[in-house]
Image (cartoon, rainbow, N blue to C red; front, side, top):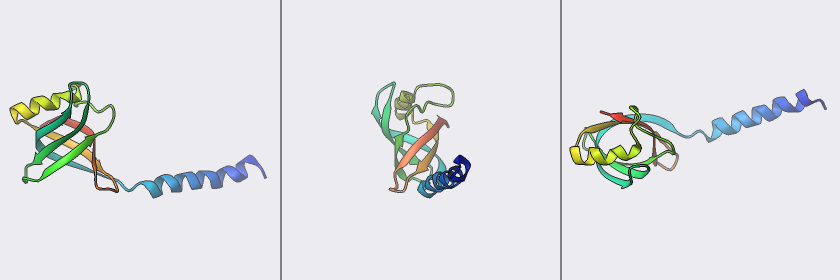
Length: 105
């Protein structure tokens, strides 16, 4: 069996595995941050109330910062000011929301 003969099926299996595990959907929402767990350099989770009044809890993906370069801890300022944020997040199979991008709203 040549390398090319077994590479094609192996690549197909790898692609199928990645696509098959992809149970996430990306969504966006604007909301007011009302609770933050973390500090100026890292945030584990936060809660925001959407424009529709829905209370949503978010986890923060590693390395996420604000679109303008501010640290994720800037969320604490939003708790104090009540200024909204725009949140782009993925909904995982278990229903949890994981933030991928965030910006001042």
